[in-house]
Image (cartoon, rainbow, N blue to C red; front, side):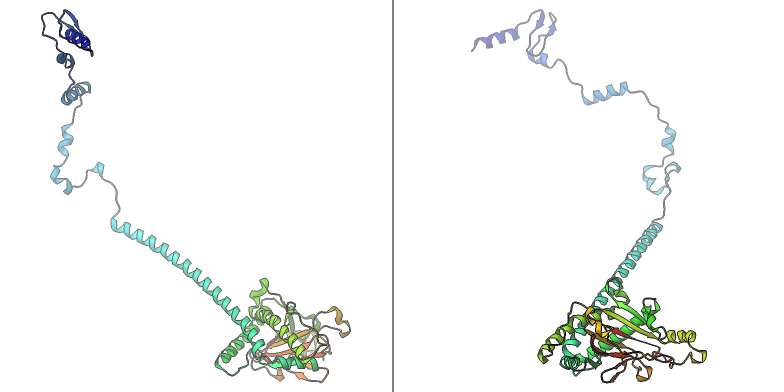
Length: 389
């Protein structure tokens, strides 16, 4: 292992005219020149310094002439902050206050628009919630009246014995107790709303003229709910609630009193209708059909015949109606002098069209006659109606 080392040392230490061997490079050696050592071989080519490289690059770049006049026009450094910018460097600007005012105005308009939309949304939502609560209250009120205050036992007996039953203050009758009196106020308001809905339907051409009684000034409309619910919400709720809650109680009471011959009622099937009397229409019709001197008289109205709800009592097999409930809607001032109501054929009983009076009839057997409405020209007495289920 020592032999290669000695040979290498001998080679690197020998001076000959020609070339000196080095593991890194070969460079010529001049005879009589300085002795070439291993250090001189490695340091023969030195890297230029940074300063030297800058000078070399500067020599390669083209020369540039600087106009000192431009520099002389510039203000001194310590005065730049106090001097306006040069004309070429000035920019048009908007005062900060104006920008702030415009931004604030835009924000205010946007906030106002959002506030108006929010208030409108809240108003619609509040109106919808109130309408739903009102609907629930009315449905509940009719149910409570049927189940708690309506004399179901007397009604069943009257239907079994006479074929009809009359009860006053069905929705608005005051009963002992504070809560009942509050319910009575709600019922009275409901009756007024139902009468108002009748008048509104007539004014908006939602009722049809009863051509069978052309001279009597009466109009009819079917209560079907659905899309037409908005036309008469209180009347619709009354029809729905009484149809659902009255028949089961009557069926149960029929069994209690032993009236097995009375037909069972179906709480899932009913027909709701509305009949309205308008005095102005009646007088207008009479002016064309009667003599001029009799135009304003109610004596020209012919007497109506007796009959049952189903029509001909001999053909009731094709009519499934077995019970009819008539609720009279009129002003509180309406009395017997204003006409309306029923007359029963069996006993001659006259039933006046008093406000909030309900009449139950056996549709297939109770023969009766509708008395003509009269009314008067006084306020609130020119119209009256009857909700029929």
